[in-house]
Image 1 (cartoon, one colour):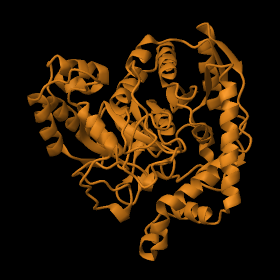
Image 2 (cartoon, rainbow, N blue to C red):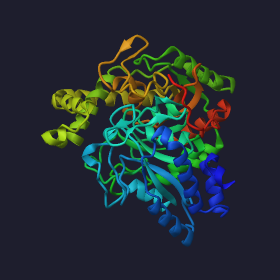
Image 3 (cartoon, rainbow, N blue to C red):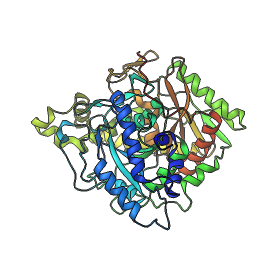
Image 4 (spheres, rainbow, N blue to C red):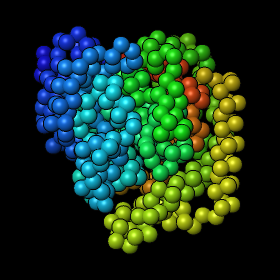
Length: 476
């Protein structure tokens, strides 16, 4: 039985740990064996820290069980390589930090470890998390377990691929323009982008940033809710951080409460979407209709949002990486997409940034009004299914061409601007077996209702046991 524990859900394994039917040390060996068996095909977890993990396991086994709070009881997890873990190589996918070993962990990692999680590995990411395909000059490319000729997307691609292949039970990710939701869609797992402040992170140079957030990834909705409980809570290091709710997100997800009235949009009125993706997501919405939910085709007005996102993202790149660009020796090591984004930001005027901020504010007020009529907004999580891993970014969808590496992610990035919680949940497969995810968007700070509805949809769709799977080499 122990050798097959990688197939179980995080909740099932945490239950075994709490009953002492299995030990954290045994789980570490199960995960390491699964990584050894599968990572040669997908390259999801390039950095392992087994000695650190075993030491943490012994402390958990010898210590008391906390009387309150979420307790993961020694569950091995993966942490994205953008996030510092004390004493572990943390590269950010960049040659500039290829040998970086931080002395302190990010406060999100500290919170997870306090909740009984054990960091076993760092998951691969594109350089500085920039881009929707996971590859970098330090570790190479990460491949999709469903078909190793295809990308797992990005930037939390290593996390999504590791979950789909059964290497770990939970993984964190981060999301600016879809970096949790797109990999979840491409790998048929769950990725939740929570409200800004829901998960404290840092310390960082830009603690007031609301575009980029941390979030949980899991093989199913209830496991994602469990991880969110272990991640959330206020920390003065993060000025935006929120108190943990009185009732757990896991309890909300377990209720599987269907919404009363939802809106469905095949494209948010701004993005080209491949026909098969449109059809699969529309069919997913009809499943809710069959379950008694009122589903209407409707969408908030996203006018001006694509342009506002590009401006604010570019300004953020200047704030976060302008110093690297200014050093010629370091600039030569930055990938072209990052150089383009910084230069675009440097070319912005104050008036352009101010206009983007106003456009975002107007969009938020329209979203609040929209959610007075609807409980959820549904749309595709990505405009197409997984594409060949060698393709750096998507150049064209449904006859619409893109001139940069960001615009194909508009279905996710438009939701980022709203600050509403959103997740990708599996909703089907194309005729040639490529995964497709449905994006479900909740009211501002409405993670509990969102997770409950997503868990209800997941039960209806019946796709939550499709993973983990052995990596498949199917070709294009």
